[in-house]
Image 1 (tube, rainbow, N blue to C red):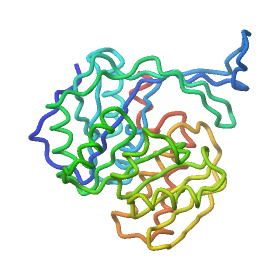
Image 2 (cartoon, helix red, strand yellow; image 1 turned 180 degrees about the vertical axis):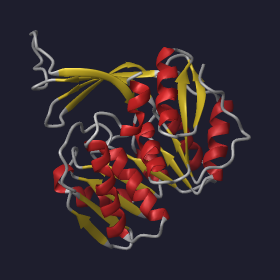
Image 3 (cartoon, rainbow, N blue to C red; image 1 turned 135 degrees about the vertical axis):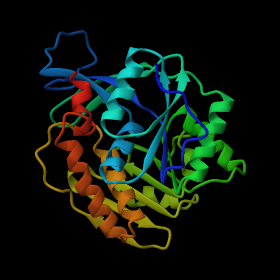
Image 4 (cartoon, rainbow, N blue to C red; image 1 turned 60 degrees about the vertical axis):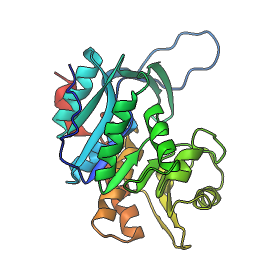
Length: 297
């Protein structure tokens, strides 16, 4: 059974709220076409997933005191999730859910991905939201990822609740999604990738126009860019690496950037640290190599 959350847990420097899942990764030579057919997998494995799990693992790798707040079911998948995070030295506050989140990810060697959600957590209770909100309020930075729980927390913030500055990851945001909108407006810093846009600078500016002080966009092999509300711009190239798996690279980048920011680095230094940390995920077939012993048990 996952550990019960406690309001007595000491405040972490960074509190991360969002998905932790148990995933089945299936490697294919190409993504399936939308017609009936048979296709042979190049390989497959079961491992830890979830954008928040990835971020907190890489924050721990950088020596940042961080705690993950996630909905986890009292089931075998939930026990696997907690065991893998524990192997990565991540403190977990697991809140009760009827089921643990599970995905089947269809992957290609080029990094293309189709994620099939096999199960999603049940809705968080009001008391659990109160506990998570309090923990995020005591941290120096609150990372609130896209999820039903995250949506409830940012709505509270927009309604006047106080707390630590929110950093959020919009992933493949296109600038128009209504689900993403409250996350943008509640955030101090927003991250995204360029999958949903042909003009990442314009997309970042549109986010800044709605309140954040900083926007960061990862561009895969093209590196990463950032734009501050002051008008400051920065960009760095990707760090060369032999890619094993692309899952979690964006979360590793986020964590490396955040760790550098907490250490007082300038914008270019933070981008450089993020690009360097991304290689840790890219060179591993797990979100972070630290979870491998628990996954392979």
